[in-house]
Length: 158
Image 1 (tube, rainbow, N blue to C red):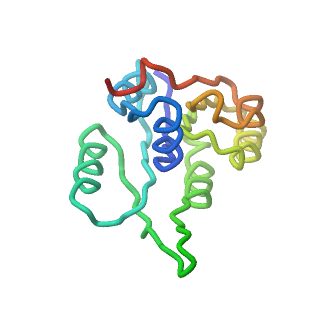
Image 2 (spheres, rainbow, N blue to C red):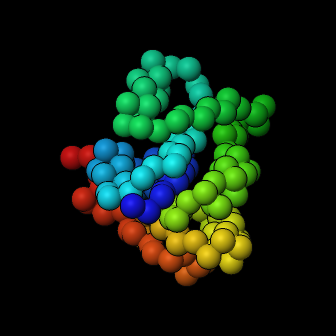
Image 3 (cartoon, helix red, strand yellow):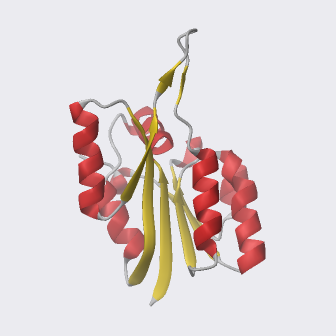
């Protein structure tokens, strides 16, 4: 069996599926697809922590599926803008697990990850899979990955 490491940019997936489908991502179906006939090395979901009960329940659902949940405090700035970005953390973890995996799965449409995906494919000759909402995923990310899987109705909670 191939070894897979899975990384989910929860905020990106949440906002893109809401925008495109006005619904939520089905993490159970995603897990089944990404892990089918594969050995999971690691699976990490990166999200923000506001501490509300609905969010805690969601985090526990992710843990129940099999994800390690990494939390970053959600920051609201004095100008009203907010920050809860995990790009550096995701990058560090992918670099750490790339040489221990046959496949890296990243659920995100963020084009900032294109350099990372290109780098690990070059360094480790590794397959990569990107899951993202097609028209909200950076073309640069789609073009650099081994396989792009568009999030469609089959991966949305009904």
